[in-house]
Amino acid sequence: MDLNWLRDFECLSRTLNFTRAANERNITQSAFSRRIKALESWVGLPLVNRATYPIQITEAGRQFLPVAMGAISQLAETRQAIRDTDMGDSRFVRFSVLHTSSVNYLADRIEELQIDIPDLRTRVISDSLSSCCELLIEGAVDIMLCYYHPSVSPRIDDDAFARKDLRSERLIPVAATEQAKHFKWNLNDKSGPPIPYLAYEQSSFLGMVVDSVVGPKQMNVETIYVDGLVETIKRRLLNGSGFAWMPETAIAAELASEDLVPIGDESWSARLTIAALANPETLAGQPLALWDSL
Image 1: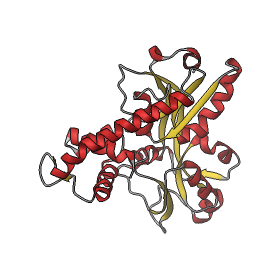
Image 2: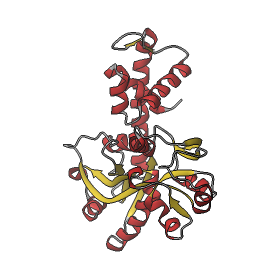
Image 3: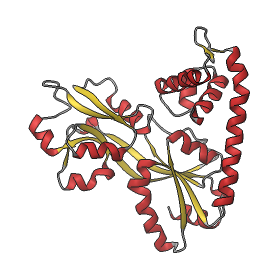
């Protein structure tokens, strides 16, 4: 059982609307619905009556809701107490960050910042967008690092948290050069056999961005692999297994060496912004110094 399922159910019980709840949880409606069904399967009873409008929480759901909320609260308090004991002092700057941003941006940026802040200590929690947001809102981290895209952005109170845009990024469709040239893969060409597609999980941030890029466009592709991690998909790309959308910073070396090549024009790309969010009024010491240096 996933803690996110409990958070999803609490949100749905409050909004009584799958679309609004999914938006609040920063995931697609289809992924949100699957998680609610997974929770119902775990409980063994329907928690939601979907036949009414608006939806209604069943009797089993009403009995389960306070248990779910109590579990969320207790786990959050326990997690925070452990973190406060283990590493919550001001010596550490605590980040929540999407895994891709951690690998392709934050690690190198911290190396640069340590030149100006020699005794800098950081602790990074890599997680999903919704979990990163929750950690920031709960005060479990000092700074959140994430991608922004017009169609998929973290739901954070703009009045409570400051935002710094750090750099731009492109998400582009690429494939191994040898296979792309041999099979003449091109997203603008609808003829020929389908292009093998290495896809992101639909509920992941990059998966949602790709959905917004593709939109109503028709693609002659066949999904052969689904994963939530850029690094895993990149490995399959380099093996020539198919094509995928990749953050440009994650494949800069491979593009320069021509091991990977784009297989679509600019209309198939998406512009992303890497941004940092924090509440500067709650920061002091190293966290504040680092925030000011970003």
